[in-house]
Image (tube, rainbow, N blue to C red; front, side, top):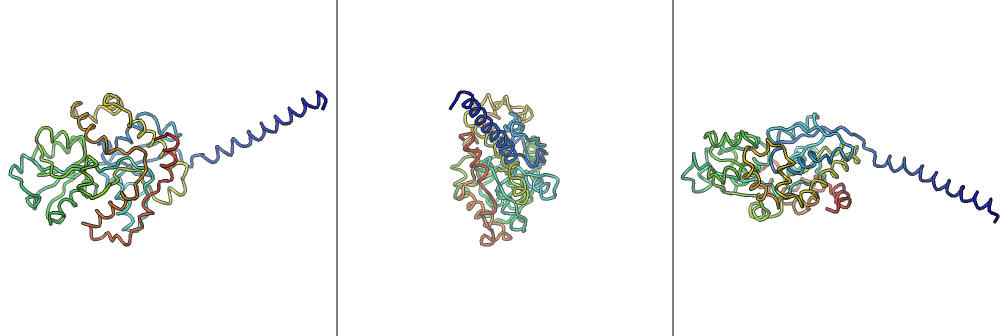
Length: 349
């Protein structure tokens, strides 16, 4: 082959490769193109450690890095955040896993697609001010119990504790107090006699001897004792049809959360303080860090929802809520790990 022909062939071959590459780029982009870039997300009590991965992913710009513009609306409790998604004013909810089971029991199909917490991080404490002579759970009959919001996971935890002592939800009065300063005020002022809530609120009350903790799921061991198995907690969930229509968007959301979980694996207390808004500290940096150390192991490592955890959640709900028939719930439809697995692989979480 003469020199001119060789050059022409190289140019042709190179051009063909370049053309193929040029054609491939739009195809790749089209495959991962976000169906929706602006997401309305609802959360109930964002300042709680329960939702720390969400806050980290937001504050460190991980949603933006995925091409998302996420507007987070914070409600008093998870039940109200759920209502926003059911009502259509939010696309996605950052809320408790068991809500997907509750919703399915009402013929509403929602699915969790990335996990933030592998333990509920909820503690149930009795006020040392209004109930100084507390002895057993039976003493709570007729009392006022504070929860983040009626119907939220804090309410579910309280129901479970009460049911194991033979008490029904109707035997007490549940009062929504939020998960921040309002919850502290409600207990300290005597408006409530006991409280089921998350950290940092519960650690702050506990360290100042304002509550006596009677049930605790802030650790994996405590969760096992209360629920009898692993109990998935905070996650991102959405209507199944939203997930089916927006798979790339859901993947981007899962990526951002798992990126945050990966960061949290090696973050020190100082890193947390620098990253969360000052208002989350509730005026006491030391106690906030003490709370973080208490719940740290309950934060998910990789966003994967454990199969046995889903079974634990269904068993717990069915044990005190007669409207939930375990044999009528299709657990496989309450969650998917498809997005979290891809995110885990990408970030080596």
